[in-house]
Image (cartoon, rainbow, N blue to C red; front, side):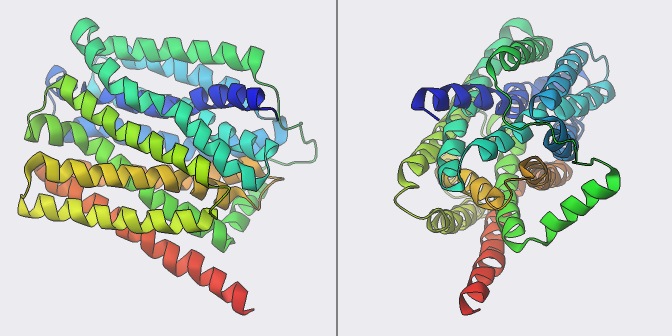
Length: 400
């Protein structure tokens, strides 16, 4: 594909991939407000994030096989329609229980964009080019976490929390029109492909037995879980514990997103010169070390906010290198069933994110310690999986 076509595709797929960060990050600054609005605890409001993570995790498993059989665009239509309806439902919620339900439904719609975007890239690009394209996608989709917390803060102050969800619904409508008119189908309908439950289960079972896929999926998943531990806890840590204003919290959140994006773009520049697995392993070590530094700073209460923010920036930078390479390396062997591989990859990663979010909700009494310990655990676990699964399997194959 030409450079202009690459840019056009990155814009469309990046925007589709952005629905998850948009739905999370634009909403974060309103969580303390919602706690007061519904007169519930912070733990209960955390469930509105956890329900989104759960819906986003398991919804992906349905879109992958459907896209392998019917093409990439029809599942996008379904997902975006669900997203629009659910976003309006969030705005109209009168109780926190309804908000939790509609956030779950909103996630079921939003997850279509991520699944299909990864599959389209695998359809169109050789694995050696895929990591670079995923980095470009991250550049586009990561504009959302850079701007949405700031935008969400101003919308909250100016128009109230309900306006956040109405704007999300409007963005869903815009995206629906963009794929109708500007996104070309990349995967022809497969009349022989079966989406019977037994066949889908067998397909997923094969993927689960593939050691390279599992190694990269799990190590990348732990990294994602650490990132979502930060996302889940950050408003309570920085607004409630360190007493940042909503506006300054948005700026800090955006700064972490900038580091994430810059790292992904550096990855795109160097991936043709340095092997993806080397970049991935180095970033894994940096992830674990920065997680440990943050935990120690939180545990011993040293250095104040700066001792938390600096390791956090390193942690987010590491993820900028990890995510595109983990995705490309995990999906490389699966050209024929890229939709299913993309779906399982996303399901695993966001299930782990949901688990960290739920656990942090239960431990929110000490938000700073909880966030630091979870991020440290995820960083060390990601490195351990990489060493004992991916590197071990590579050594076995070399010896063989």
